[in-house]
Length: 327
Ligand code: A3P
Image (cartoon, rainbow, N blue to C red; front, side):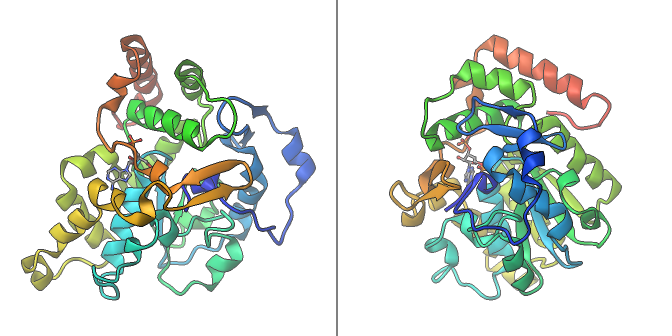
């Protein structure tokens, strides 16, 4: 299975080769479980940069695509489960549901991540309407994503919780020395974390959602936690498959919330420890269970000092000032 799947899996060689010399000249930093390289103002896992460089030119968005765009550790796994279950409900019953045997990351391919069914050639062969996902910022996707009419669901999370989740996750998947909380914090606050700076990522999609509210839905992890039923209903409408009166009467929306809940998914064999380990680009090791840690809002207080919390809050206030986006 895969996660930050952009941080991910078995690299098949892309058919077109980007300029490797250019990649080698880009700024690179060590510290997280793999080195990161700054490409077009976004820190990417260095071993994935050349794959992601192809996306802007080679990925062909379709008008009826639905793209789940997330900043990593914001609940990608959850959003994939919900969106997949909602949109596939006419084809799958809960008794033979693909999520019973596959990690949620697998059922919605990442754009530009070879080996998760996300390589670009494979995406071209998928029937419409496609349900796809990405951690890439809008600026690294083709501009036609904004003009062709496809829909985007964006998910972010309160930055302190997202940071704590990132720190745990990186230390779980890495094969070298773990990164200390303090070093991880400094890098995260400098914007240097996978797909960071997080503020640019959030703001790009936030502004897009203001400009195209019919086509870009902006979600936060915390709002799904506080009212999952409302989000599931809104998501169904946004995806163009609202619940019918009969479905509502039968409690289908509630069933989907339960089926995709943290406890329900975490307890499936496919998502338990030993339920699958994959080598990601030969650099990191992903175990399905590492995608399900605590699933709580406010867990940062158990790891970060008060000072760190205040520092991050100030940073967030400053970066989002005037945007209308608040955490
Ligand atoms: P924690 O590390 O805080 O527990 P992503 O899928 O983007 O990598 O995000 C992972 C975070 O989402 C983890 O947060 C994980 O526990 C949480 N998560 C995964 N599945 C979830 C679910 N069904 N409900 C709520 N949280 C979930």
